[in-house]
Amino acid sequence: MHFPSPNTSPHRFSALYLCVVKASQRKGKIRRLEACIKVFAGLADVKYPGALEQVARMALHKFPRVREAAVDECWVLKGVGKGVEWSKAGKEEEGALFEALGLDTTR
Image (cartoon, rainbow, N blue to C red; front, side, top):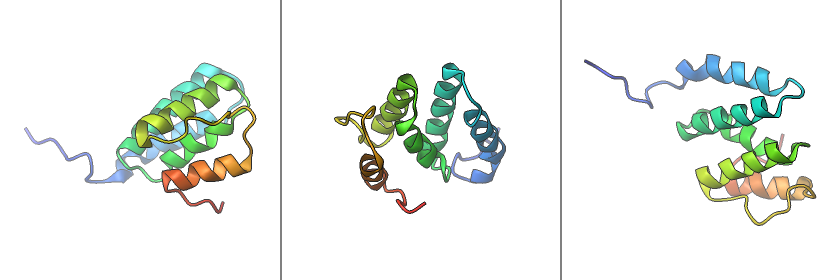
């Protein structure tokens, strides 16, 4: 039996990525947002473009549990994000997080 390599094509994750982006933009439901962060982290782990940026953007979310989940995933994936009070963080800290993750800070 032949199993495809996980790095063969990022296009097979595009439908999942778009579905999760859509779900993460809906209001409310903290559990849904935490689940979206987990899926984005999994996609970032297989190097899907844009997934790590989605996780990093949620580090400044208005809900504390969502912020904590996003920062925890950044820590697990790249070892950055801890040691900052994200509830009081601003654009400078977000820029520093993006830089530490190797993401483009110009959006």
